[in-house]
Length: 221
Image (cartoon, rainbow, N blue to C red):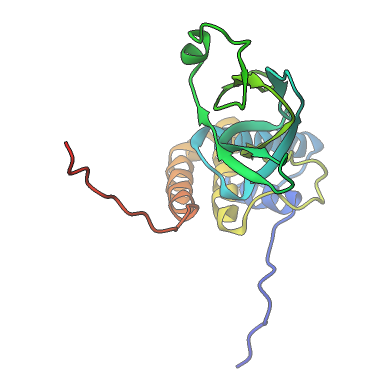
């Protein structure tokens, strides 16, 4: 018996919607139902951003800094900054130097924010347009290199595929079914919510960095 020799299974937006409605005991018969499902799907993506890391949405980005840079805007689809370094290319080679993230209160309490040197700390202001504040202010040109979490792309056209890793497809279908049940099949909401939370927990448990970690006790204290 032969196998398919393919591992490309994915779902388009309309297939996710169809699967979700079937779990609600319904079939899509009206344009409003499609529009409502797409809106619920986009809200579901935003819920995932609030639940924690989605590894497939982590990407490296850079921002060029000139002398006297105190702050700069991040892309509006940035959810958060995970880590960063300051890259110094003045010697002809790229030297990446660690930089510490601080809180809003810690940045507020910096007495002289105009001090010039290589930045050693940064604060991320998570507003509609996220912004990074540096301390000290740059004394020359550097590059801010960072890993960011970006938003999951909107559903868009019904023929689009989803911007979701294959591991989350079962969770996507059950999550949308739960969202739609709130509006169209309240008698199934409790069961669909439980299935969604179970599917999400399994996917989230697998969606992690599996690098090894070592803990060394501090014997000097």
